[in-house]
Image (cartoon, rainbow, N blue to C red):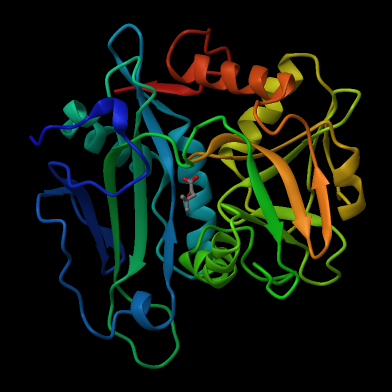
Length: 337
Ligand code: COI
């Protein structure tokens, strides 16, 4: 095993011991195989390469204070991958099989889970791809499901340090009745051009409005939108083209547990400037405060540019407290390895 700087981890690919793999052929999934080689041999006519038959997930495992490793809500990600497979006409991975694969691969790479106290975690990336050869546009007859893992730190430099976001009206992420509500690689490919433009302009993240009217907030490129109103209500967009985020769902339930009012409803762009706090949330970014949102010549400032707001801080501390085993897991979200 290579020497890892546990305290200096960022969100970067790293080779580990192995990944786990199963192939769907003739209507059934093969037994799991642990594969050390991180490269993949596939048919040049595989449907994932030509017609985008691809789904992925993102979840995490944590080394807790008691030394045990726990995976956060794997069944919720399994359910979402199941839904994505249905939407893209791929073979579905049963949720139990998904959770089993995740548990086994974390266990096989347990020494790559960052030590408690470093702030790091193990990022788990399940992938489902059409690997059957097809040249006419049709679903493949063969699929590969694999799960890879790697140790990660914070997604954006500075962790809970607020970041600036940009709205670029020239590009959309997902069509109103498209695939925004499932986790396919194409949604991320659709955001790359805008993302690179935003980055060049000095904004680490871009925010998307609804593609049809550009009047309502949808989501950030890699994460969901949270607004905290001045009277402490938690608000998040209700839209068919927003990805149903597991972290977003978790934070909504934590907010309700903390006695906050939670509203899932359309958020007009004009409402952003009334929010006391705004954040991006997701598995990779956890909770990232947003201190400024720019659209054309309009610059909306939100909260303290140098510190996370109090409500978001409380939500962040609670979710991380549950994940690292410091707070009671009253919802039964953590699965021990
Ligand atoms: C995650 O938060 O796990 C995601 O899938 C976002 C990712 C594309 C970095």
